[in-house]
Image (cartoon, rainbow, N blue to C red; front, side):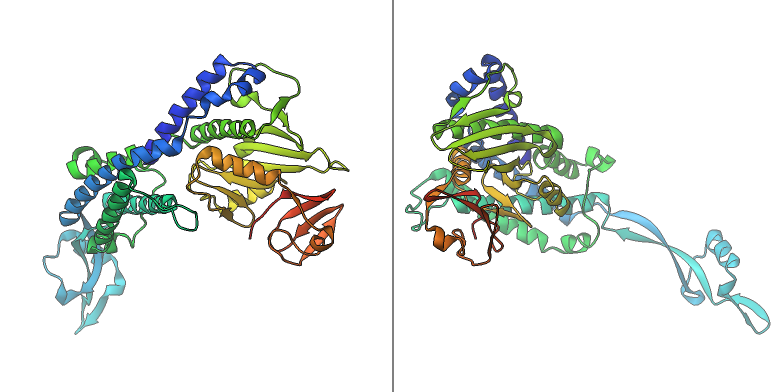
Length: 430
């Protein structure tokens, strides 16, 4: 499925690139950007999910045959055993025993070995190829869990005001994910999986061994892995994500009625259109490309603000599609000095001590960016007397103020009083 998502992303970026070449100046690019609105990776991913599940079903059947008749490495192991337990001593075993004086003892005036070196063959199940099979099973399990979570958010509920009506595609996905999850659990309960999984089954890169090249079953698993579970290149994928979501961000600004202002410039590449500045009745919003973090700075300034109040947000486009940044990466993002947010294909999130998705799954990509921009430009009426001591986001009372900007220590929300309203340069929901 990863490869499928990558192919769909490249196709979408190809359309955006062609559009940029046809609209080389910022004004015409932004003015006609509605033409790119139909592009939707969400819809395309859903349509391709059933094909992926069929491939998973086939490869799990192949893995079942491997588990029944696994490739076993026959290896020689050297041990030290009591002399009376050894049989068939070879010259090599005797030579090694002679050189080890600790094994010899005097018995009735004669030096004899109490123990000897002994070589015997052992069957090694946890070889490279079988460890790869377990690695593949774990990767498939993680992907199915992610797909199940995504599907769950698409199912309507009474609280959302809708119930899912008959939908053949969703029903087929629901059945397929359930059946494959059961099949996968049975495989992971086998002795093969339990034994091999005790060894190191993490692979930074899978080598094309002779078994992968010449064995039909192992080769099928290896090709499935390359086709479905790996990306061609992290850097290229991150660039494509930046092009795609920057375009969705511009579409969201257009939907909200923002007008392009400032000096026009000419460029035939989507990301090089930035920086761009926009305005509506209440706010200025500027977008700046930031290659160091693989995203954009979203700079927001209210027109009514005094003292130059503004918000600097770093919006990163998560290429993993699952918000799985490491602690080191989160530390690097926080070092930017901006409020850090993230968006992927299915959700938006904010970054504090960890990545906190907002639970927006089930919303299309344009809806995700609309929600993001509305949060950044939220003006809401509220009592200054009350909210100088109570956080308007979580209700907590651990609120402090610095230069008219109030901060809540509990949920990390920041807000400013503007006339009769409150603006939230940094809104963090509990």
